[in-house]
Image 1 (tube, rainbow, N blue to C red):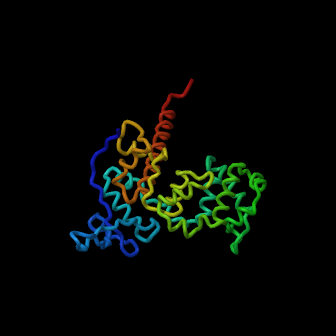
Image 2 (image 1 turned 60 degrees about the vertical axis):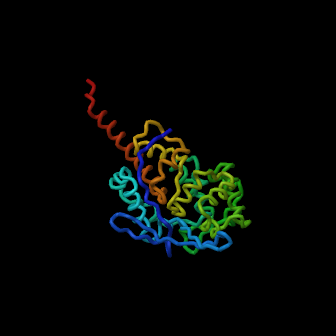
Image 3 (image 1 turned 60 degrees about the horizontal axis):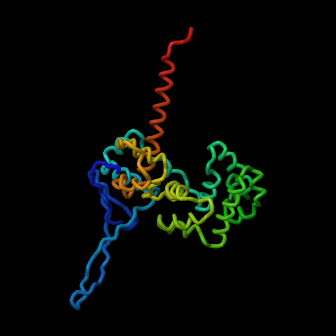
Length: 289
């Protein structure tokens, strides 16, 4: 069993309007929305109230990243140190692709070195009809279905990935999935629906939700980099198991996506420091005669 120190976790009590939150003296507070229910009590109707807890808006919403960082600094002093040394996340500043394009991009990049994936992706875009902008390819279901398996194989896409792309395109073309439906689904529904697509697993869906939809509270508990980051952050003697991650990262709610991003950066910085130390040690060795 993994133990970690107890810490109070500020939790939003709801979300009103556009999900705006106020930052006051380092604390965040969300406006609550009350729901009135009628329940019988000794033959009478008694009004009771409950508070609905709503997820924050996407991280790309104006001001939302500042709210997320304020929450994480307050909720987790150790993570606050990582935030201070790393800076604010940059991934939400890039324009997001449509859902279909993003998922196709993810499939093409699976299990490939970045340089190889980029080369195949560039050749893939060259097969897609251009939009009014000559530099913009329209990656949509119809365009992908118009490509044969042989077309895709010719640019270096494996037969299996070609089948994955056609399955994804077929589900969008048939209306099983749509841009509006994907945008409206919560995280559980997205995971259930998108993993029905051949070649799309939990990790791919988590990355899609974080980097394409900018969902704020996604914890990729099976990601090795995030797990190693949590081990490093809290000084754990063993690598936490995926099923232990939710409890360890509970204090980050409702901004676990941002916490996960900092775990990747933490491990990158550790790797860079180790590489530099090794380089310095080699440089300090006496030269051979």
